[in-house]
Image (cartoon, rainbow, N blue to C red):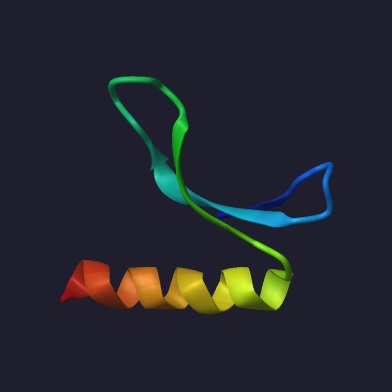
Amino acid sequence: MIRKLKSGEYRLYSRKKNPSTGKRRNLGTFKSRAAAERHERAVQYFKRG
């Protein structure tokens, strides 16, 4: 799940909420949406590993 920050960067969040905090886990901040989308695909690939 990618959200745009006020600073203009994009942050990748986990799809599920973290049970201990009730928030989504931050999986990295990227300058462009394309970079965030690439990383999201990489994350999904490794999760299946």
